[in-house]
Image 1 (cartoon, helix red, strand yellow):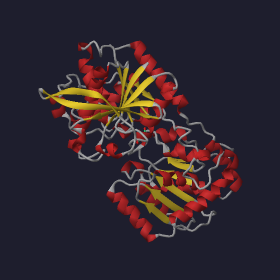
Image 2: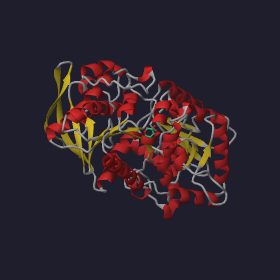
Image 3: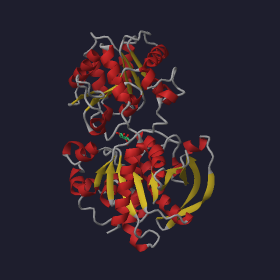
Image 4: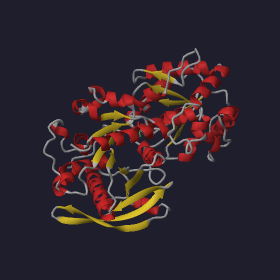
Length: 476
Ligand code: GLC
């Protein structure tokens, strides 16, 4: 089974958000099932500064406005998974991974089409082209339009995975003309969306998937569908929700060199030393009895950072410390900065992208707050559970599918709440804090969370089945 896997990010080479973790880990799990999956990424200028070995493989040209745009193809590996890197003038236009929408739309359209041309140049014929998020969506449209005119592509099936529905990309109509990929039948899409890459991908791919079963249901409703619910509902027979996993080697508190003291399920008491060291590192009082609450996230409206800060403000009479790690939206950054300036002895805001510190926070915090307005899957809650930090989550999307609400009859792995409101979060946190005071009960809860199996094994098998079914059914 040959699969070309298009993504704009893949850990550890290049990471902005959760997509990178998935693209860096799922293909590896698929390879262990015998799938010949190969990743293709843009060769961003930022990536050129990173130190890894790459080899030049050749060139590919993409037709653009009656002329040709050249792509240079390089190869490297992520933990034994082959990776192709596409370079070219549109990709060199900016130094950032994600930049101005106008620059990005051109950059990623070129990337998506060059990735296909590349296969032909290399003589490697995928059976499935699996594209992720809006950045890779144009490959779906191109195949829809051209696969029956070119024997190399005839019969190739397409799968489009949505990691984040509201990120649709910007107007690509000029690109559609220049690359000659105008698609006639987009009538199921609302008119405003017919020029945006993500909706075009949703309308043109043979199969659709998203990253949790609950999110696959939710996006068929007006509350979560961002105007695309009708199309998604109409295509529901072709829409699958497959929960993301986490790589149990990458995320293993027993072998994590970032931690002060590695620990496992059996010696969970060592966690405390991580907590104490973390409190010190963050400049908080080194008193392990005080519950340490945490958030590790992009600072984005989606993630409900404002909900968390408001909830904490309503709980000033309770003892807690809070650490927030992440960067993003400047309004949210300013709010978090203010909050930590007013309560410096309880609140620490680390405005950085700091993967090693993130690991120490997973290992040393007591609860991970995830009050997302929507959450396609979410990885933080799974990592937190594996590291013994108890998730407090809004029950939506992948959070709903991975965190089971605490039940005093020895059940549950976290605390869940319904509405995306400070009060609902506060109540869940208070429930959590009352269990926290019962050390024995808390230890049992941590153990239940730590042994949950979120490895890629199950998810990769589900992708395998989806690929298999898609190949067997063929292209209509
Ligand atoms: C996006 C989503 C997140 C998901 C990740 C990987 O970042 O917001 O919920 O876990 O993609 O699929």
